[in-house]
Amino acid sequence: MRIIYETSDGGVAVIVPTPEYLLTHTMEEVAAKDVPAGANYEIVEDSVVPSDRTFRGAWTWA
Amino acid sequence: MATIINADTSDGLKLTSDTSGQIDLQSAGSTKATIDTSGNLKFNSGFGSVGTAYGCRAWINFNGTGTLAIRDSGNVSSVTDNAVGKYTVNFATNMPDINYSVSGIAQDTVSGSSSNSPSVTIQDATSSTTTSTLTINVITGNGQSFIDSPIANVQIIR
Image 1 (spheres, chains in turn green, cyan):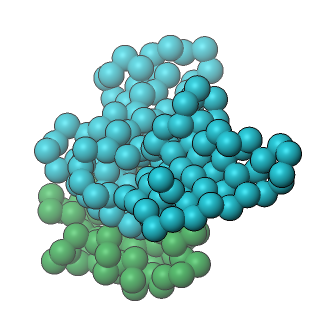
Image 2 (tube, each protein chain N blue to C red):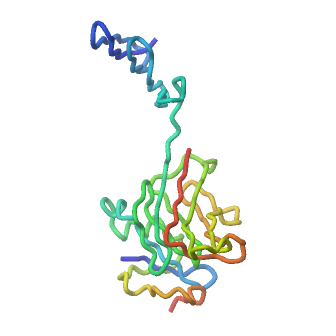
Image 3 (cartoon, chains in turn orange, yellow):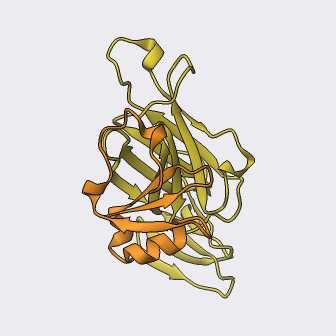
């Protein structure tokens, strides 16, 4: 699972939790701690995030 | 004085205690390690004398290519993929202040090309180091672009 959120410049950041932290915390707790305050975010499956990073800078929040 | 646990060469284990709050580990009457009243762990272990051990307070090894993958870590809750070669390391437990020391290294992306030998740097912004996060860049050896490295390592000492 990943957490995606809208950055202040309209782009998208992807939060990848560490396996060690997920042993004792939930994705919701990771989001509460590591997503910047006020940012729109969503918890998604790994497959939602593209592996092709050729146009990584062009990713936008939709 | 201190509470002393001494592995004596003639009498075996000897325990001497007081109310100072410090603990000394001794071998043949010579102090080899100490936990002082501030909780500082001090040991010799090749220093030549008993000195404070400064710990690695956070570390991570991740693959920044494709879909970012974390191999292993310590005291890191997550890594934020901000863009190509741009990441934020989020600490599980905050640092006591922002005066920590950072080191990092990343794997080359093109064999035999020095211009692609990457460097790990702290991002050029005042907000790059906080008590809860560290924002880094991985850049090409010639400094001309950001790159995703298959092995990116960061350690924080405090």
